[in-house]
Length: 143
Image (cartoon, rainbow, N blue to C red):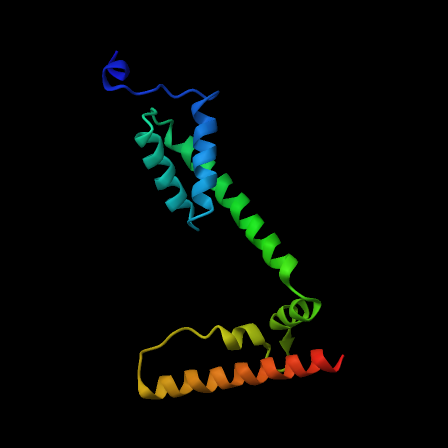
């Protein structure tokens, strides 16, 4: 009776779940966190006049939509990578003895306080990255 008075469509697995899955899938194409997908799905269900299911149901739908979108993004990136780019990415994770630090660990230094000295260090790191990239490019063109 209250639903009718407020004009709210009852939640049904047969219909509303499919709407929620579609909405979550659309949201996952626009935002990149599960929480944002969940919030957009809730907002849209309310806007369309649907009764909301249990939170766990919506959370699972959002998680699945997020996983599908992330997998599609990874496939898209993987398809666009050349063999040289893949090899370079693999080399990021290889460690060099005795330092036992990978190239990735050298690149991913965390941000520090914005000082002149830190800016100089960041610029040095940028020059180093550009040098590494130019070496990779020269090797690729030599092959």
